[in-house]
Image 1: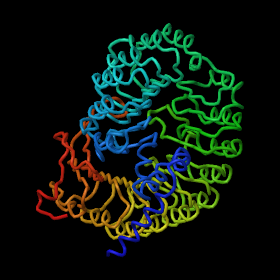
Image 2: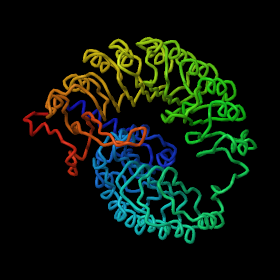
Image 3: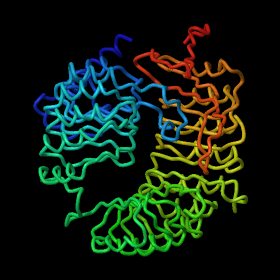
Image 4: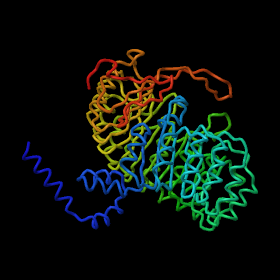
Length: 559
């Protein structure tokens, strides 16, 4: 033991012999967080230098650490991205009062983080008082403020931002739930800010917006170009644009690299006409109204395409084109035509093993693959998809993120074992309606050596099976499950997954009032959730009544 300690000390010393001057030259070129983490483990000196020189911090769940821990480790970072509620909250699956409060973080920022220039809060509860504290403490130097899918604040809080944050280059409010009292916040920006470059309140309910204030922003901020089409336009989002307005895009179509048609009122034929004029397109976001025919045109016309997102279209009668169906035919055309594709998220109405195998054969650059099988069709051509999933994973060796949401019978236990066996580099995974039993889940968990984040919905697994799988997934840091075979209301069988620094939370099943497709209120049963995650901060203290913490010590278990 003593001999091993001496060897380790010599190793630490040999690494530390590199001069601070050399390290100081190298560190600024190491940006990837995983590379930074690896560097910090070499020796104490490198750990200290990483702490002194790291400029950007991302915290994927605000309860995995604490503000004071962040202060003790990193004092000089300039950019912070902090996430609150689980991703499922974007689909109204998490109670609004679950947590994710930004207040303790803002207080720490105000007191100690003097170098901070960029703050990005995502899916968090933000109060007006938080915005006031942030504006008063960091307003003179804050360049970027992103309130991304946040809630809890009003235009009164934004008023402080507009009045005090005069160096703000980016104000991003997209999809946030904002209480609108008046439009004075925008007027404050217009009269106080001359450096604004990006102002985004897309998909919010803000309507008290003065066009005079927007014109004043455009005049005062020479880099702000959101009011008219700039000559070098390369990104364009078209909200509620219909067939008659589409020709205004044609003069710029050759320049476009990114096109957002998610909320454009275009049918399949319109998609084809527009897409074939955009040969330099690299990013396309649209709905499944694009259809197989639109994907055929895309594959033929846009050889540089890297990212494609196809969302589910509106279900209301008359809102979608009768051709607006994406199936295996469109995916096969896409795989053969767009060889540079790195990201694909798609809702399909039909799918076959052969089409997934095509993706594995041709899409060698694919890093992120997400597929949801809709329930529109009674019969699916080719289920289960075991062999197709296997061939896709074997062929796409660069995959880091993988989502597969099917329907009962879509993937057998054998297919689930294939996912574990052929996903050596996948770090995030979403699985829905897959597998047949706990045995398939256990086979899956024997693989996935890099899996850090796992989300599952609508599966048949028991609490005991889930706990056993978690213990086998050695890299797992986060688990979210909705819809499983609960053995009891207390979730005691889940405690078998307990380990040091591992928090387990249970959200019991509940009835939720929602609005159906014709606007009528309906009550639906929301199945129970499991949320488990690593935390250096220990169990959180702001649980609402809708969340039950599972404490192994209370249950009399030893870790």
